[in-house]
Image (cartoon, rainbow, N blue to C red; front, side, top):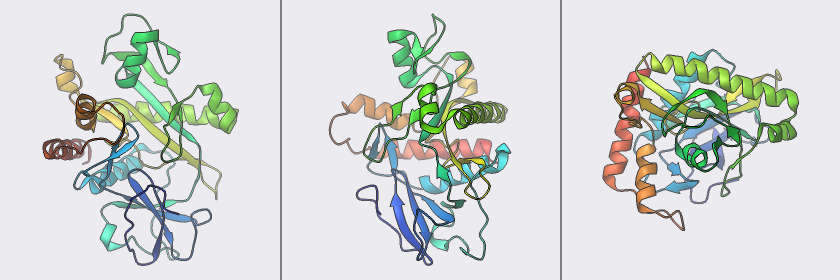
Length: 296
């Protein structure tokens, strides 16, 4: 199984390449398959995606930076997650990917991106101007781009296969997909983790504007666990609180630099243009700055 067209698999001793997503590659212990392997090696590449496209070139060092940030959040948040320590059945993480790989439990993943928004921005701002809603959630009149919402809102999406666009869905649709109990648990966990992460980030002068989580069920315990990446600069919008409070909204530590450049230089038709070196360098620098602020 390959997944993303053109993704280049590494030769890792003791591991077989099983799948490539937009920005991560999955490996299973040699001789096992992705469906049944109890452990998976998740390797974060330097690929960067925006608007459901993988862009060229990648961001140098991105995989290692975001693995460090994601691993730190998993360990900090105090909620069940999929990280696992190496054991006799899998061995250690190969040296070639030691800084950009996580050994994780192979969960039964829910087909939902659990999006939580604390501020009005991005596609939510576009929809709000048209209808006064964000993903169908009615909001008070008179809000401006970048305003803090009265309370964070949960706006789930359906996780589309590689090559297709994710689709915003209602909470009622998540109930149809995973059942009432799991839909409620995922929503409540998402809002709780967002609140905890927002508090931690704000203490360091960082606003968590929005993020997306993914969850899966542990095959051994049945517990719902936080999975995939968590609260990285790719899956979240992070803003500079000092700049925000001074009226300069949207100064970010994420890939908004990439999004902004694409919006100004591409009509979202066909193949995206190659990112300029200056955009690549600025994005990498902002990723590093965020980690320096948060990870102690």
